[in-house]
Image 1: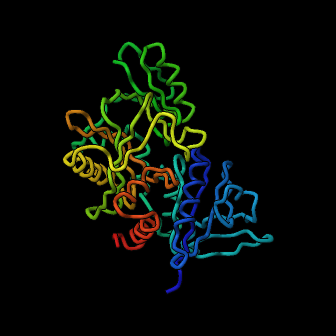
Image 2 (image 1 turned 180 degrees about the vertical axis):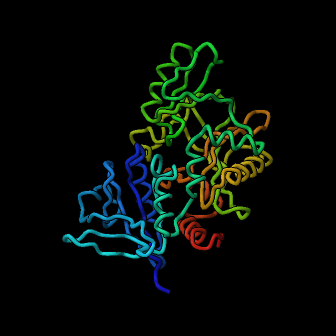
Length: 346
């Protein structure tokens, strides 16, 4: 058999563009060149698609050509603009390495469904559902999973600060990482926090603060055939966990340290993993996702959020949790490719 032709899409027009490029660089370092022929499709911050040599830091200034993913299923691949004409390149699979808006919200997944090309990760419905934290909470609650108490604020609304018990967290309902997130401890801080969140989304979520350890679990698989990575715990020195907000995240965070495996009891570890699997199934996830939760002192596990295309950088939580369970990023790529093509873990 020849090598699989894999289109790897990275960059993107969301605020998580730099993280996506770093994730793609780690994928490039881990991709088995004996199995895969990669086609690197970089999306600039302005939304231009370019076929390039790879995801290095200066990829936009390299030898790039304009490219589009054809929605015509008879093409089943890329259309590359060359001297006023289009060259068609067929693909066996697409691996989207995109985070945040237009990457995890069902947008790119919709384009891939139109194209008819198999792709890694969650489908349109589960991507959109997990991206909207309020909707994810509603579905999780209906499956018997604990969530924080929450309130939504629409574009033309202002919440009544007197109706809340503080502290609360104010965040964009549909945005990635911790962009636009504020911890509010006093009534007079609330409206300013809502305006900060609105810079990223017109729909704002206000959540009660959950007292407990922030934990996560990497999940890989489809339906009932799921693999859970090791559980991690985010140890905080102060403040709250603000992922991807550091100027040099490779050097670590100024207030948080991930502990993998988490320093929790065996019983709690098992409960966290099984809860993560239940959340993954309830929200219709497939391929891979990172499920973030809180572990309370009484042993209760509470959903925080689900990342359907988690970071794959050298410092990201998902590959660290999988590595602690014995799966390198090379192994993870092999597994998610198999899931996209066959629906099964190899």
